Amino acid sequence: MASQQQQQQPSGPMSQPGGPMSQPGGPMSQSGGPMSQPGLQQQASLQQQQQQQQQLLSQQQDFDPVHRFKMLIPQLKESLQNVMKIASLNLAHNTTIDNGIKSSDTTVQRFDKSLEEFYALCDQLELCLRLAYECLSQSIDSAKHSPNLVPTATKPDTVQTESMSYSQYLGMIKSQISCAKDIHNALLECSKKIAGKGQPQGIM
Image (cartoon, rainbow, N blue to C red; front, side):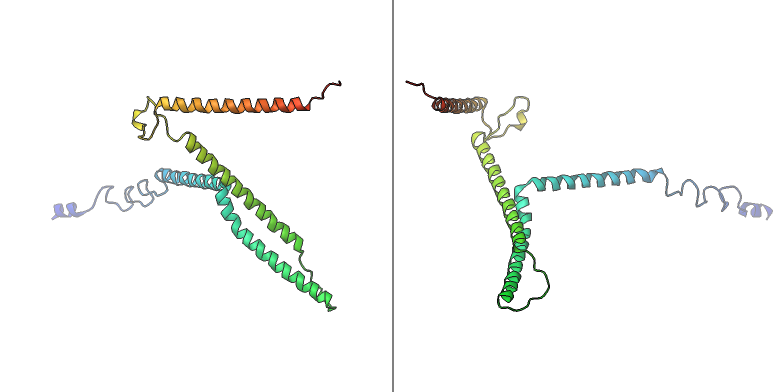
């Protein structure tokens, strides 16, 4: 019986409730250890990348004339409504004065100022349209004069079926050079003629 009681008694540091393995504040149960720091750094880096991408996208949209035009359209509508409203108020105010009726002391907004704001927005829209037209014409010209890519010998896998050969590319470049020379010679002749006409003639 004594031997059975000795076997049933818990002994040793592993079974103690206050041992190092069962302590809630021990090294194995710590939640704020160094294992959670890489995850926080990754989240911070991802947020920085997203912010940089948003900033780049906003800058590209600011330089895009079509996007700028779409942004100015609601402002133009609001400005037109404001012009009509101020015009009606000024017309009613002047009508009361012409009829000899004493008008209220409330000040009426200036019509010319609101009209200038409307014209300024119209000018911005016109500039955006002109810039978009220039970009479109340049892209059309580039596609017309150099429509296909030239294959490179270092990367044969990237060769497209629609790419031109090197001889065709050289012919296109030679034609562009000859056209540029013709324009240069024409401008020189025109400048010489203008300079010759501007010189005073000698006295007979």
